[in-house]
Length: 165
Image 1: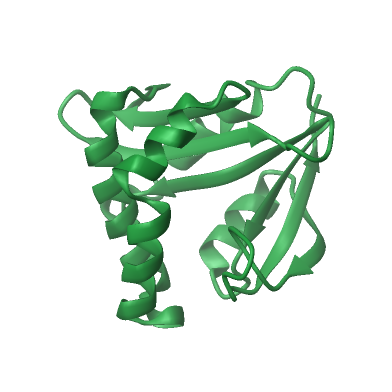
Image 2 (image 1 turned 90 degrees about the vertical axis):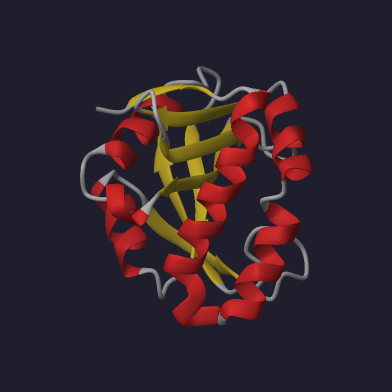
């Protein structure tokens, strides 16, 4: 049984490994192993995760069963749009998917931003499982981006949004 808790610096090596495994399982077919490895090394390094953990207007959680981490989530208030919380990451290891872990992580993150009027995220349209998850949780497509996750990433994505409260 997994429970959702706030991540600590001690969790970061395991979170980095979790993200690498989840990204290879999810995105290998779309982007290939080399591109996934490149993105994972840049976005999911322990150093990159430390910066996320240190951010004051953010929430970084893990799903923990006492032996292993099965999933993680990270959201932060938008730096450019007041009232918008951005869900940057929500990943569950493949062997633990469809057990409610993603739902529990999302439920926690959704309540962490009392000043947010809406939550926004970017998702690869090819990732049908994620698109289905988010639409089932009240998100709707509001646009598209050519650079998911950061400037010049070259990764096309849909922008989804949901009203909060």
